[in-house]
Figure 1 (spheres, rainbow, N blue to C red):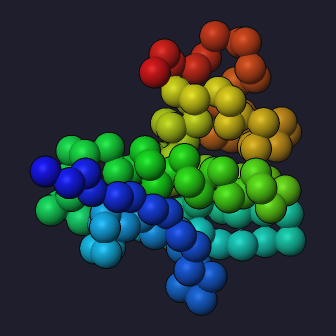
Figure 2 (figure 1 turned 30 degrees about the horizontal axis):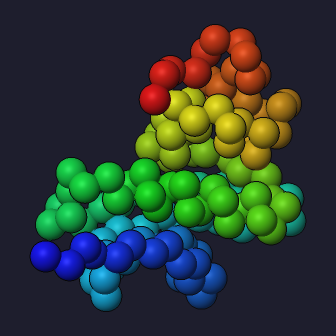
Length: 115
């Protein structure tokens, strides 16, 4: 059995990142771009693709893209916020003065849940 390939791409016209499983669109994260960064608003995975970890693949890809572009992140989407809580290596993408708004502590504060 051939392993299915995942990829995350940005669709700037639609203001979202998308995750594909092979050639099938499996989900997306809507965002609003500002001068300072990206506000992640909503994450959705098609129910046909649920339970495969594609939400995490999608969030990781979107956060990695934000980092590569030097952008701050505001995780209004609860799924993105929980991902950052569980993966504190992404906490630095959220401006320090905005972390309390999202119930995100500083690295090493013990507020992040284990993966």
